[in-house]
Length: 122
Image (cartoon, rainbow, N blue to C red; front, top):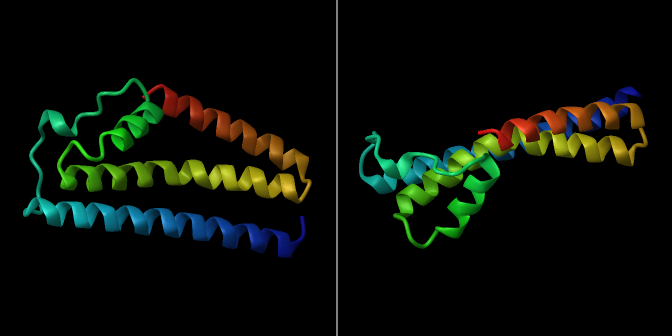
């Protein structure tokens, strides 16, 4: 790999991480502000009741209108924060595929498989 290629990938990954973390913080702060308090008490509403992370995403998105708006915003913020490293690896796989660096495609696909397995075993 050349230095320009490394720099391009680092810039792309940097943007993915910044967007993921900043958007997560925004959703969480707005959600907490909507609760009227900066602290939350543990209740069944906050427990993950899905067999894995991808099911949690689906159930959260499908129940956006039924729960309180504060819960929805905080749940979306948590989802964004947890999915950011996953998206980072997906972007890396795509980048290496486009640049035809198949050795790194294989390595990042292995990392993607490990992260996917961990999210399926929540």
